[in-house]
Amino acid sequence: MSSTYVAIMAGGVGSRFWPASRNAHPKQFLDILGVGKSLIRLTYERFLKLCPSENILIVTNKKYKKLVKEHLPELEDSQILCEPSMNNTAPCVAYTALRLNAKDENANFVVAPSDHVILKEDLFIQNLQKALAFTKTNKALVTLGITPTRPDTGYGYINFGENVEGEIHKVKRFTEKPNIEKAEEFLASGDYLWNGGIFIWHSKTIIESFRNNAPEILDILEKGINVYNTDKEQGFIDEAYPTTPKISVDYAIMEKADNIYTIPSDIGWSDLGTWNSLFSYRKKDENENVVQGRVVMENTENCFIRTKENKLTIIKGLKDYILVDEGDVLLVYPKKLEQEVKGLVGTYKKDWPEYF
Image 1 (cartoon, rainbow, N blue to C red):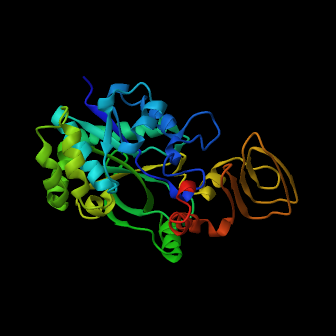
Image 2: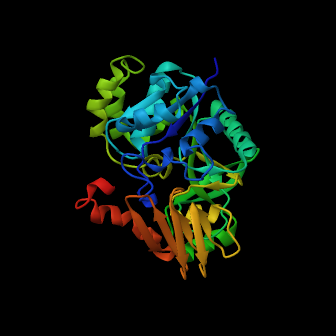
Image 3: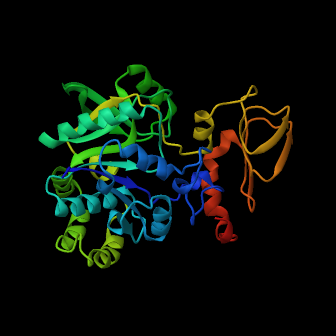
């Protein structure tokens, strides 16, 4: 049996993609690209090139289990790990590692988000295979470092050092979301990569790293070691998981451990984190607009427009705007202020919860 596994993280809400992404139906379950498949479906199919379907796990919130089954009917219930609370990525990774290690002590696995786009899939798989070969024989925590294309302040940056084997480099340090001056400096140096949140490690190595760097998480979840992969697992997780600290794996592990490595990866990656990132990814018309839906435009430039197919939309004189029509909600917002969209959820949800 193959000891290569993949854990796809699919528990987020994607509030920066509101109003398309809602609490009841977040962006990983949307056909946000207009290709007839959801992001989670595309991610699952991409990883079938790396390991068999039975070795793919989905880690999600309990309330999304039904959606996971709808989009990935091939999966057994045992392949869907259900978190009772949203405690960020560190508890998610620790739970997955303990669960896999209890099943297979040779488990070597990839952790990846469910809602990213990767255009160069073959190169992506090749880089993962190189990383898995390295983590199989070395106590190493590997991340795919994304080759940066602009001084973006929305990403964490990986400062990489000497080459240790093949295309694998030692990581000197992580820097979370620098200011624009630092981001420009990092890009110019050629020694920095974006942290895309795609990790590769052996189950024993990452468990040991939790023991050394975040024992408060491991101490809680390790108490269920004898019930993982049994019918008692969910009951234990429902009780224990909400008591774990809410912290990302980047802060809990990657910024502390000294055995971090990276593979520089030019794989056509986008995290599709915002409407502008989707705008950047999609093909533009002659006026630099991206349009999804039945839209007639005049004197409209540099806009992202998403409407319902059964609705004719006529626009004139709009420039540098996001327009998203989800039927019950219409968002019209300046592109340059798109980072405020996430804040709208917190501002208006208490008054109109049915729209969020």
